[in-house]
Image 1 (tube, rainbow, N blue to C red):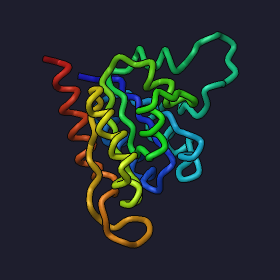
Image 2: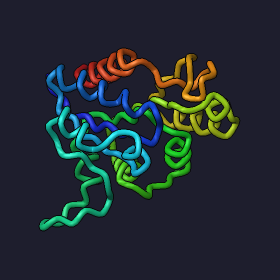
Image 3: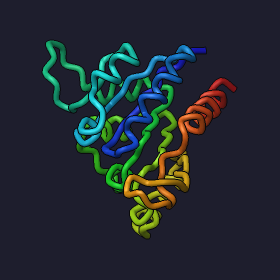
Image 4: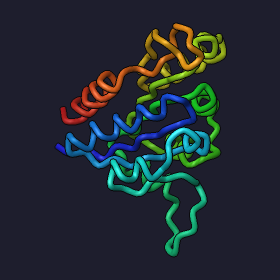
Amino acid sequence: MSYHIILGVTGSIAAYKAVEVVSGLIKQGNKVTVIMTSCAQRFVTPITFQTISKNKVITDLFIDTENYDPEHVSLAELADLIVVAPATANFIGKVASGIADDALTCTVMATRSDVVIAPAMNDSMYMNPVVQENVNKLKGLGYIIIEPEKGRLCTGKVGIGRLASVETIVKTINKVLKKKRI
């Protein structure tokens, strides 16, 4: 069965791994629409995701189109699942606080589908009590969190905060989608 998955990418060095997630989902026959924050575009270009997904990449909430279409709402309605990988502390804090100020946060706020979030950040940030409170709040609201792994971080030190493996992310996505079929 084919699904329409929205993959949100936020501004983390781990953004390059999202390319592999898209590739894996496309190989399974899914349609993937990527939404990138402006910070994500500093790590990976939209053309990379467009090439892999064979689909338009959303980079801005306000794009001139001939036909009026609030894309964040129409995408949210079409999505079988929204996945944000990597998810920064900034993104997690915005969603936990109900802030919708870009294409990705607006789409997440507008959806009725499940939302899977895979955090990636420095261990000091991830273990910060405010970030932990936001993660726990999202869990309590029904968001699915793929916990980050312990490993080498971009600073060179080892700690918890490394984006979960591509295999773990794709496996979790498939598990959530399988429940939708039942």
